[in-house]
Picture 1 (cartoon, rainbow, N blue to C red):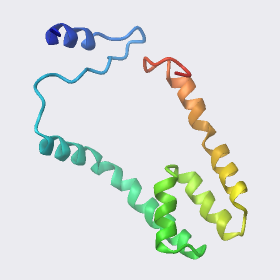
Picture 2 (picture 1 turned 90 degrees about the horizontal axis):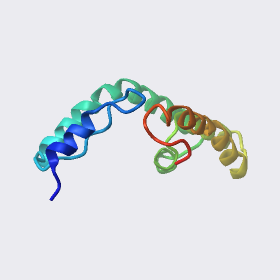
Picture 3 (picture 1 turned 135 degrees about the vertical axis):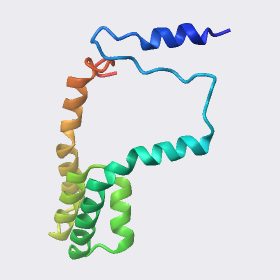
Picture 4 (picture 1 turned 90 degrees about the vertical axis):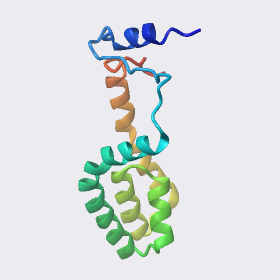
Length: 128
């Protein structure tokens, strides 16, 4: 049998880097609807940046000749704002698919560097 009290006490201890470890779920789970509402409320502040960016990207995509389906597909497949804007600009200018994909990859290499730098500080192993 798992000792939930001992597990919670261990999880509350700070990691060697001084960052508290993420606690594991306990046996007292909240109802799904309450958790969904709490999650939705927690993401509301993100709308302040997401809505203007979405409008900007949508206008740029329409001006570059994207239809609604292509613009939506681009947003669903590419989850990086700078790469989305670069994709729209490059496709609008007539660039090939290989150039668009390579540009998006180079733009997003910064996330690898972020991960390598922050991994050890957040308790994860770099490269894991």
